[in-house]
Length: 384
Image (tube, rainbow, N blue to C red):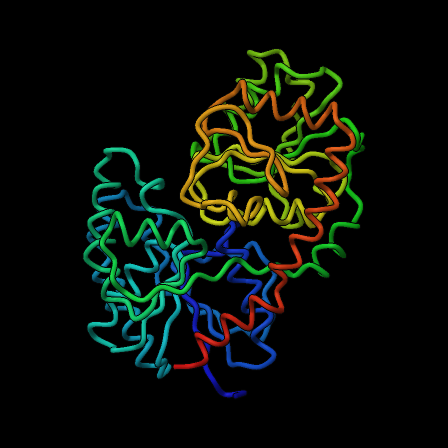
C-alpha cells in the first residue's frame, strides 16, 4: 500500500476549517501513502509533513473578479487534467466549491475518479440573490451529479444536496477528524497575554459576514462588565467589528487577537466558547473548543452545530425561538442577540451547568477522534 497515491485538491491552505482538515488528513496519511496536495493559490498557513508533495495549479485566479473566475473554470480544469496525466493520478479528492468544480471539469479530459468533499450546505451558503450565488447554484446542479462520490461533512448537507439540488450521486457522510492528543498538547502552550479564565469568553474564526461576529459583540455588550471577549481570527469585517466595539463603548473588553495557527492555547485559557455563525458545514472550532475544556454556545445554523451538540435530535430541525439546552451545549436561534445574551448569562451564572457541559463535551469529542475518522476516509479513498 506504500505506493498508493492520495491526491487532494483545495483552493489554498490559508487558514479555515476545510484547510485544517486537509492538512490533518494528509499529515496522518503520509506514513502509509504517497501523498500529493494540489493548490490553486500558493498560501499555506498549516504545518505540512515534508513528505507531502505540493503542486501549484494556478496562482492568478484569486485576484480576479467573480465573473472572470467563473469563465476561467474550464481552463483550470484543463490545467488540472494535464497534471493528472503527467503524474498518472487515477483519483482526485477535492475540497470547497471552486476546487470541486475544477475537479469535475477535468474529468472530461483525464478520466480520473472524482471524489468531492462538501463542506457547507449550499442553500445557506448561497441564500442571497447575487449573481455569483446564482452561478454557484447552477454549477452545483449541473456538475455535482458528474462526480463519482460526494463526501458531505454532515447529514444536513447530504439532505440539502438531495432535496434542494436534486443530487443523485452517491453520498457518504464523514465528520471532520480531530487529533485530540495533539490538540491537548498544543493547548498547553503559553500565550503572551493574561486571561482571567472565569471571566473569559472566546470565539475563533475568520472575520467575515457569514460568521456574524456582530451578533456576538452586540449580545456581549449587554452582559456582566467583568467579562472579556477574545476574538481570534482575521478577515474583511475586522475594521467594522472594531468600530462596533467603540460605538458600544466596550473596546476595552473585546480583545482582537489576530490569526494564530494554534488556537488551542487560547481556547484552553477561556471558560466559554461561542459560535455565532449564520451558516456552517461542520464547524471544527466548536469541537476543538470542547476538546480544550470550554463550555459551548452555538447558533443552531445549517449545518453542524446540532449534529455535534445534540446528535440524537432531528438534524433537520432549526431553532426559531428561545434557547435550547441540549446534551453537550446550548443552541440559540440564528441572528438573535437577545437569546444569545440569555445563553451567555445562563452559563456565566450557573457554574454547575458550565462544569457539566465541560465534562460531557470531553466524552462527546471521543466520537470524532482522528483514528476512527481516518479509517472511514481510508475505506473510501483507498478502495479505488
